[in-house]
Image (cartoon, rainbow, N blue to C red; front, side):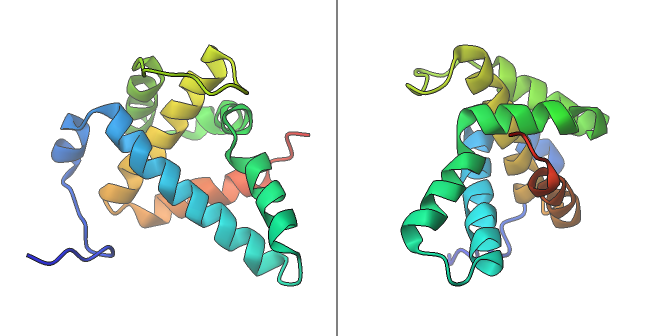
Length: 138
């Protein structure tokens, strides 16, 4: 059986049965690709090193936590439930540059993105990601 990255649909029921850390695993990748593509599209002449540094400012746990705090009120009930499950799931480690609370909120953020992606709610995923890039957390 071949796998098609653009046709990877899970039903909402199937997605909700996944471990929230699995959703976060997918969401982390989707978010990283979105941010990198966004940065390249808007900074075509920037060096790779500068693009990388700018990407880190978006993808580190502290930033993800701040973004989620700003968009949390806009989540629907289902998305908020996924966020809470991701936030409340204990993982084996915490990054060296984030405190536990930030890391858990960031995990919930990533789980929400992963859920939207694997259930092919692409319009909603894009809506939330575009809200994130408009937020100035500095």
